[in-house]
Image (cartoon, rainbow, N blue to C red):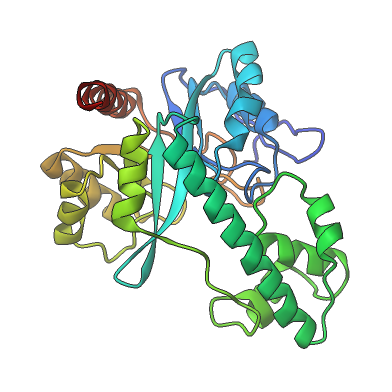
Length: 300
């Protein structure tokens, strides 16, 4: 059964209100590659009874300040977050940060550097699309997504809107997929640096949507480097893997977390609040954040 309720602009779906103790700890907005504004995702969380919401845009913190007044108005706890694109042994990994200081100078400057690298990537992909006979107006693209950190999703949407492909899947299949002729790799941080940046900003670093073949030895290595949490539930995460990762979280002293990885309410199970972190796990994450703040203060 589809949940009732729609946002006026972006169809943010609502369901029967949940327990107020739960949290959605992985949500994106128009400030990276989401389809909904910071205010819209906050209102969506309030509509389904979510107590706490983490905005974790890719490589940017800009949505947090925009969302805070609306979060205060609807009494949703806003957890400052981020999702950093990183690399380990040539493989892309995403590191979540929760309870970060969004004004931390090292984290802010790194985000600026990553956004600049992403802009260079977009220009390179547009040049490749042009060489393939397609057309993308970068100025119009920027005006269409004025606050976004532009990426492949925005290019795909442009190609659809301009009638050059039938849909986003076709855009990725023909041009923008990882092996596509217009693809340019994303800028990535070394995974150790990503974890250190989040910890330096007083936050808890977490492994987002782990690969199904994650090994306990790899997770142990990440934990030794300062990882504090791991996603154990979310879209695309096999429940059997989630149970195994939860057991490893206990073994390595990590907080098990969960979230929708919300970008758009375009598929079942992907609306805000469809996957949540229960109260006990949120408390574990919060305690790790408190421990980090104490540690930072003692070493500064």
